[in-house]
Image (cartoon, rainbow over all chains, first blue to last red; front, side):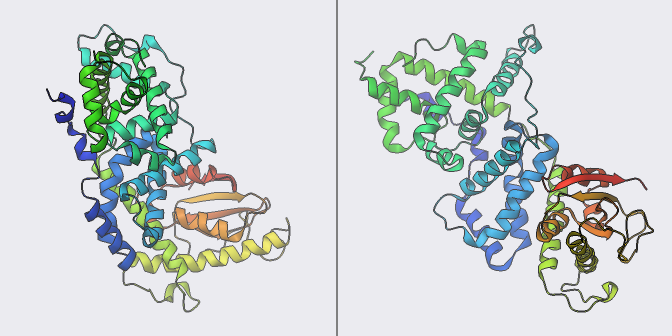
Length: 202
Length: 228
């Protein structure tokens, strides 16, 4: 019997680097002729993705634009230096990730999710189970160290493969697996619906 | 459940997120699927992963509207134009008569701004060479009536103090990135006044927002909006 999961690809596909070739063409136009239209298109392709990712990294809303624009400043100035060893999306998201990490490390962009985990803030009395789970999930994500959170977001929200996540985070593949393993365990602690689904682990 | 080979189970378990998101490499997918079919623990875990996947994806609502995207891009583009204008050779000395490398009003103004900024940076260099003797060698200070060459009436203005030892190049980069041009200074405390470019204002920048950004830079010890 085929596993349902294989066929059950969700709408995340929209966030995938659907057409790396066309994006590379945009980059080539930027590198070759400083094409503003190509640059604007590429910017639009990544704006929402990066906004989401940076938000999950606890970069403040008002600082997200700065990190995105710093990232695309690099894209504009270094377009000719992209050698194509990786997917373009891996390169761009990796730049954004490192820019955001540097900013957070400087403690200039204070994480917005520094509050302690507050179970009372979850409205468990809600009649909408999905809404409650969503609240639990948000709290669970906030509990994750940023490296684990990014591994999870890149895998699920942006739909990257394990190897692509490793390239973006600039770490070995096994490190990605470990980070995601720990993230999964943490989420199980806070998502009631998950608690009963999986018993003993490996 | 099939006989478990510990390493196989552990590896399959680690790869389940990518089975759930459909991005598992084909060479792994076959054996992981085979393992999952015979392993109750992995089937349960896969179901849990698919649940997390759906929740995380549902939670991935757009963070901002398209107008935010356009506004952000406008800021970035103004920054790029300013930097490229600064890098281009400028002929002539009168800011109002600098030939524009391109025909747009934006670039003409930015070229003028670069000249004004260059004048300010020259003054800044003198100030750094002369320690804190600001204001005693003809350099206009913030507390004096500033020379207003290139200054626009009611342009958003910020007061800036840079960390000692900050290079002219760094200061130039900081100013350019924010669309700022020095119009007066240094003052008694090595403070400068810098105005926002028309394009930066058009893209939504304010004295408050620029001061907030500048104040985060380690090379800037003070950045405050000037009330007008």
